[in-house]
Image (cartoon, rainbow, N blue to C red; front, side, top):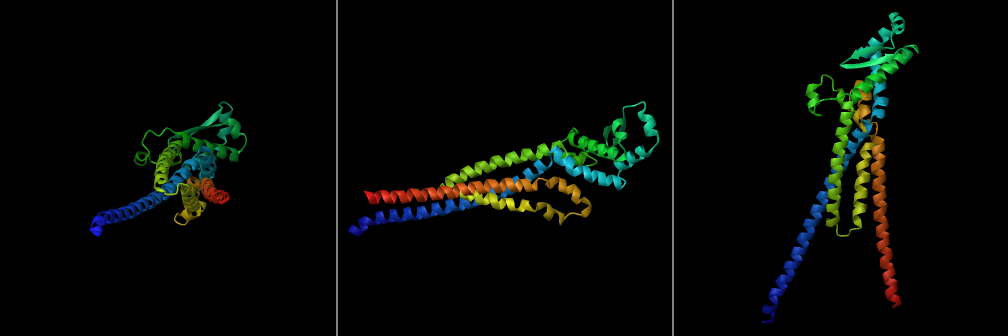
Length: 275
């Protein structure tokens, strides 16, 4: 009878143990899934941040101007027109009665002051190329980002302020999702001090591809377009450092919390012995 009376208790005990292991397994499974999602978000976020930072005007001007200038030497319209106009003897006569010369190229219009013309052909080409890049960057593209591919004859919007704002907007969206998943991970981790350690490792590992993303891209791109594509990855090294530093900071916090727990444990042991 005692055995029969105790049977429900044993059954409840085994059920509790089974439920504990099942819940623990599910919790760890969800945690692993969340960590994988966070790692993917870091890769996507770093890619978006690379595009966003690389497409700031100063970066675009520095990277794209030499490409356009190199194209001018290869008889691209803008360089050909600039050189032809400068070599024309009519330029000096024109500047006697005008303040500058107006050029039209691929729906873009810019004016080169006669004061620049007086400095020689190199100054004319440099000013013209810079003006052309500025016109491309700040042009008001009246279309949605992906619609611009269909509506634009030349995909110059890809190196515009519109593109920069688009990629940065997507980056902030990914950042919000990353923060939400990190908060979820906090509730899934049994030892809360482990979360900075885990996030730090994921951030540090996720930064590594951006150390050599330019070299990796060059393996799959025709040499003719390498310099142009480089404009989209000019800030990759900065993004690598940002992600790596944040990762190391979180990693350091995780290690510090581990040592803090160890110190608290040792102190508690010594206090017990004194008592």
